[in-house]
Length: 450
Image (cartoon, rainbow, N blue to C red):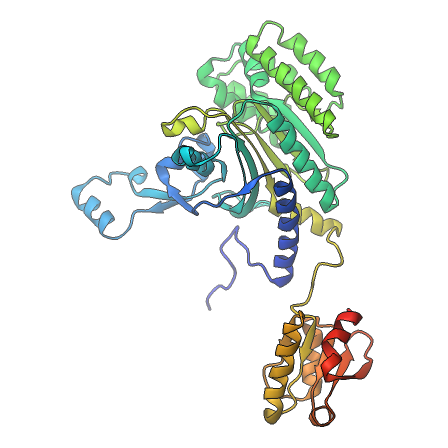
């Protein structure tokens, strides 16, 4: 027997799931557009060269690569140019929405405004190990702002993210922020070679998974000096104010110019966020594994979920990697799947999200009256109602049972007596009450009844 489950790490979305997703996406889009972001979509498939070496070693490993196909593959096999696994693929499913955006900006720079702000809500794919709230196919809901070094971009995106979460009913989230230059300063004063910075950051990024001792062990296994990194890791779990954290960082990085620049940026983002009414927590251990970040980095966390609900940061060098000019950029991404998981567990979805495909169902009395049922359904649709027509003549009991199954609140019965009298019988599926309404008034009556 064929296995009917979706592939591991993938999911089917039944109607209730889709309606809830649409609700959350609707809130996200509404807020993003309120902040002046424009919609953008990019292809699911990118050239492999576009994506490789943009995310670090882990990203390269988790990318879904697409094998060369047909005559092209056969020709290269015959010529012997496909020598190993690295030569078998030329395309890949997009890993995130940021690198495709960088490609778009580099490709259409002359067609885009100087300061380009876009939002994008599309699926991405990663060959990751599935876990709670972690899938191989999942939606990202991104905003990115291109063209300015101003830290107002960071503050604005954090304000938008905060507004979205509050609109969805979250009241216990925490926005954590750090800066790649602060991390670079810590690595610098610890004596870590520049060539080992990326490797060290990957280890630090695992703090929540393997703990302080695990990170130190991983650093030592990679022959990376621990130095001040241990002091940095000990920040974890301390509930310090932003001012207290800044003071400690200033003492730790007094001899590091790059670290000092990072601290200055953090102070400015804190000031701008306070003006926006957004509270931030500085987490000096926050690293975020993606290698393209160059400045401030941030994550949004809630107590009952491992990992983050959202995250992002500044990436001023990424667009220039496509052979064009260096263009500053900053982005923020909300993880739709994780938000849905938490909202489901907490019972946070509003009661007014539709649970039925229609406002009303029209019955079919017999084959001779089918045309009249079709006409009634059409009349009510023109009046603005969502209408399900039972597809065939059947016993009324079976038709009522079906209406109950799909959650339709009202059923219109158009039988021989109703046709003769120019009326419609309307049954309330919740109360069980049934009343007779003039046919010309049934649509307006149903709208009044809700």
